[in-house]
Image (cartoon, rainbow, N blue to C red):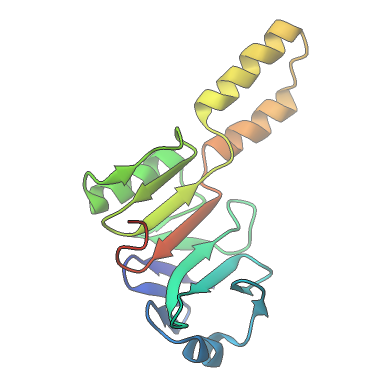
Length: 166
């Protein structure tokens, strides 16, 4: 499956295009009903689509991270398979200076392109864990390896309509 994220436009999944502002009915006719809770989920909960008060697409999120089956691309780069810092640099280049980094490296919002990324660990948090484990004399290499993988790859990416994150 080929997935291309198009900031401020929407998402292409193979030959299907889900566009911001598209109605819930239009999405359902293209994607099917999905699993409906507070948002529509597709592909075993790896893709979520949110709607605004007018039932128009306002936010699209890929939730699978490196371990998932969906492998989205943005600006020609694999979102989950590339190093988190590399993707950050590409997003910043396409966004400009308006980057919200209030969550200490766990997430970033690129306001001009309405893209947000999130991860469960950061390199700094893993280093703190390593220091604590060594101080306590209970170092766990398997844990460190898992956390480093999480720190070096984004777990989710979300695209919002224009001004979604403002």
